[in-house]
Image 1 (cartoon, rainbow, N blue to C red):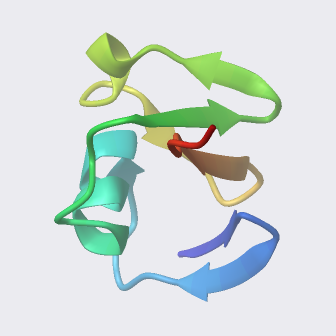
Image 2 (cartoon, one colour; image 1 turned 30 degrees about the horizontal axis):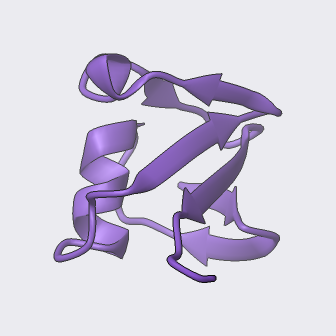
Length: 68
């Protein structure tokens, strides 16, 4: 499966991935303070286990930062 994540094309050796599975592969140690948008629509964290991504999806993973 080929996915576009944050404007980069990445390959995965699977036929399907949930958002949570994708995050477990991409950022296993930093999953607090992030948001995920699929095709410009934010997906609530409560839906990450059920929402399957497709090869045509544009995925944006946004990480909150602290600043002042």
